[in-house]
Image 1 (cartoon, rainbow, N blue to C red):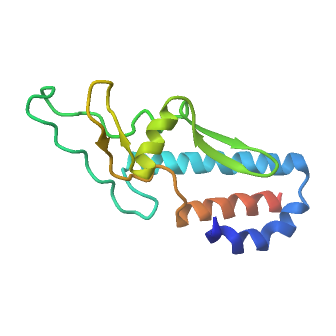
Image 2: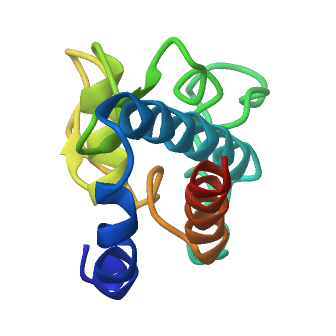
Length: 149
């Protein structure tokens, strides 16, 4: 990510002074806090830049009766599917399992078939994972708290 380059350059010297175990712990803390931030943002149905997700398409009249009562991505944002990992070199946040395909389709706005017998549907791009100014502040806070200890 180019937007993190200046931030990375400033802190690289300080991070080198940490032990490998300290770096792993810090990366793990960053990943967990970023996961919580991403989960809350997905729950609010907002993109990283603060714009709301495009709403679902209206279903045809012959489809199921009633409305869809569940919000979008309710299960995707759970810790079961959204994994946070920290290593000595990086903090990663990723979708795992079968939901990874669904998340990619919505993240990039691709075509997919809702079931085997339906026609392909073009989904709107809804950024599930992304980096906002608040996320950058979370990373800075964790790093500073680690360096103070």
